[in-house]
Structure formats: C-alpha cells, structure tokens
Amino acid sequence: MTKCNRNAAKSDANRQPASVYRHYNLAKQIRPQLTGSTKSIQANHYIFGRMKSELNDVPVQTVAGSTLPLVDMPKDDEEAGAYNPFENRKLTHPTTDTETLVHLLKGSLGSGILAMPLAFVNAGLWFGLVATLAIGAICTYCVHILVRCSHILCRRAQLPSLGFADVAEVAFLAGPDSLKKYSRLARFIINLFLVIDLIGCCCIYIVFVATNIKQVVDHYTQSYWDVRIYIVLLLVPLILINLIRKLKYLTPFSMIANVLIATGVGITLYYILTDLPALSERKAIAEVQHLPMFFGTVIFALEGIGVVMSLENNMKNPQNFIGCPGVLNTGMSVVVIMYSLVGFLGYLKYGEDTKGSITLNLPVEDVLAQMVKLMIALAIFLTYSLQFYVPMEIIWKNVKGNFNEHQNAAEYALRIGLVILTVVIAAALPNLGPFITLIGAVCLSTLGMMFPAIIELVTFYEKPGFGRFNWRLWKNIFLILFGVVGFVTGTYVSIVEFSEHLQEE
Image 1 (spheres, rainbow, N blue to C red):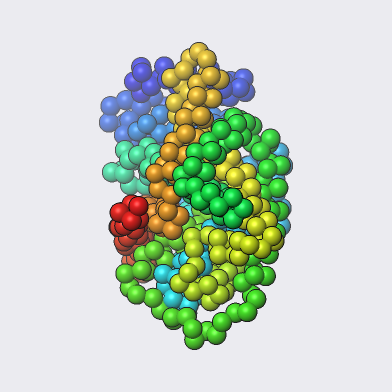
Image 2: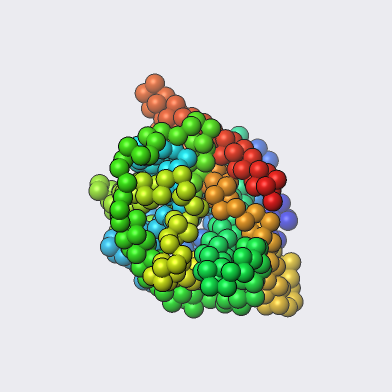
C-alpha cells in the first residue's frame, strides 16, 4: 500500500464516528501489508470503500479507486454462505412486505401511465397489449437479476446491503482480475445514467404541467400563448420548492401528489369508458417504423429500477422481495396490468388523436375535465421535487469536497442551477411524445436491461459459471442486444420527431 493510499485512508477514517475509528486502528495493526507481487494476490481478497463502512465498522481503504468498505473476501461461496447479510442490516424503521409493496406501487405508478395510450398509437391495439405485457415481464425479470446478484455479492463481500451503483462496483471488484480496474467506471456510468434519467424526467414533468395548464387557460382566455411561456413561468415556483433540502419535509408533497394522481386517473378512466368505439375501428398493429416510439414510451412508464434497491435494502424480510409470489412479482403484475389497461382503453377511445398525456384529450369545456388537468398538473409539479432530490444528492456528494467554505451557499446555487437547466431543456424540447421516448430509450434501456445483464455476467463469470450450454451467457446477450436495439432505434426516432417538430414551427 502506497503512502498516498495510507494517508487517504487516515483522512477518511478521521471523518468516521469514534467506533469506526477504533476499528480502523485495530485493523491497521492486523491487516497484512501488501507489497510487491503479494499485493496483487492479496488485493483479490478485499473490497474497499467509504459508503458502507459504518454498516460493518471497518476502515476505509481504496483499490482501483473503489469506495466500498474493507472486508476480507471469502475464498469460496461456501465460506460466503456463512454470512447472512439480512441479519446484519441495521435498520431503524424497517418496512413490512405490505409497506414495501405500497412504496413499489407509488414508485412505479407515476406520470408514465398517462402516456401509455400514446404508446399504443405507435404499436396498435392488440400488438401494443401483448408487447406491453412482454416488456413488463422482461423488465421485472431484469430487476430479479439485479436483486439476486445483490444478495450474492453481499454474501461474498460480507456487506449487509448494496445500492444499484454499489452492486455494479462490487461485481467488478469481486469478478475476474482483468475487470477490477473498471469497478469505479461501472459505478460512475450507472450514477451518470441515473442522473440523466431523473433530470430528464424532471424536464418531462415540466412539459406535462405546462401543457395541462395551457389547455385550461387557453379555454378561458383565448390567449393561446406558446407552451414555452408557461414553462418559463414555472421557473420561480420550481426554484422555491427545490430549495427544501430535507427529504422528510418533502414527504407531505408525495402524499398529496399520490392522492391527486389517483383521483385524476380515476376520473380520466370514467371519461375513457364512456361511449367506447368498436375494437374493429382501431388498427391491430402499427407500422414498423413507429415501434421504437412504443418501446421508449413503455420502458419509460414501466421502469422503476431506480427505486428497487433502496426498497429492498429497507425491508424487514428482504428474502420475500423476489420470492414467489414475492413483493416484486405482485407489485409489477399490478403495474403492468394497470398500464396495459389504460393504454388499451385510451387508444381505443381516442385513436390516432391520442396526445402525449391522455388528460389532454379530455373535453376542455367540461369543468370536471378541467379539474383533472389541474389536479394532474399540481401532482406532477409536487412530484418534481421528489424526482429532483436523487440526482441532486448524487451530484452534490461528488462535488461538495471542492467547497471547503460556504457549502450551504454552494449547494443552494447548485440546486438553482439544476432547476434552471431542466426548465431550459424543457423549453427547448416541449414536444412530450418524443421526449418521453428519448429518455426511455437512452436511460432506461441501459439501466433496466443492459446493466443488470452485464452485472450478472460479471457476478457469475467465475462461480458458479454460466450454466449448461452457457444458457446464462446467451440469455444475457439477448437482453443486452434487446436493450441496444431499443436504445439506438428509440433515440434515432426521437431525434427525427424533434427535428420534424422544429421544422413545423
């Protein structure tokens, strides 16, 4: 271990609680010194970092730039099996299976459900139904892969819990020697896509809010302002609500938003179910060139992988998360059925005239419909702050070390800057349909499909292997290719749609 690494370890240890510091001094005495050729051999038995050090009361070290706590890596899976990560989790308020199911539904049932009818426009009535169920099954399976790999890696690394980026980092550190040097890169890429995804969702939320408000205002004033004006007018309220730094103060906003969205979707279904046309009036399958738009929209609506690991990590009985039927299977079944139902019925009702948010199809002259638009607008506005919290935390944790003084001022400045950025992007790209497809294709095909498949390949590479006929290898290659096709085609079609929209203006 170099002098630089030892100094870095001491610096990090000094910032830990007293109990961690005592363990650091003890470990410093008993830890084998890694020098020369021994260093590379011994390094294979250790995982390093800062993020979970308090959970294991171990010192902070670094190898290949990793940020995970130092623990002795078991030599085989039998030894790893003796460690039960679930019994070592220190949870102040663990959630029951039912509570976790509710949180999963809240995290997955959002504004995306309002865009599902538009997805069916780009797929056709019956193909859209079958494909939504199939994509839902694939997304659920990919979450299974991620959580199962997390459990395996927790045992190998003797860590009680891992976040999404942690899973990727540990997988590479505990995998083949040739991949250890990419562990920090794996963490960075996942965090990068999470930030892009959530910032993109914030932009979509702004367009949702502005478009719904514009319809109601236009009806009463006949002003017909450009939607960009409404987007800009949202800037100050968004800045004010996002100056709240504590998540607990945002919880009431989440509760209000959930009630408003549930009420709004319920009333929307009432309008949809009134005077439905015959099934024969809608095309069964759309043109092939429109299918990438369908894929991007569905993956955007269904993919809640960003919240999965935090929910599983906080469970009282985490083994029930991916069991049978399990919390994940139950929750995703409800989500996929509801999204399929809204998409199917919404397209059946409005056909090719379906808009980016199904609420925009409701009769604007009807007072109840106006209330729905305003309720949905308010709900999504309040949800913005919750969506904004995660990327802000990821970015701030990585840059706050550059501000030794005036950290509060720097954090507030960063918050205001990010809010302004989302408003600028939303004003530049106010076309809701292609925007949703772009975020779904770019971020969620990678986070929800490609990354879990790659993590499983790395995790199972040495032990227990890829199985008979390398079935695990071929299965994950299929998932990666499926994600790549969705990424490329969805991105291309979205860009084409944006360019056509700009030319029309």
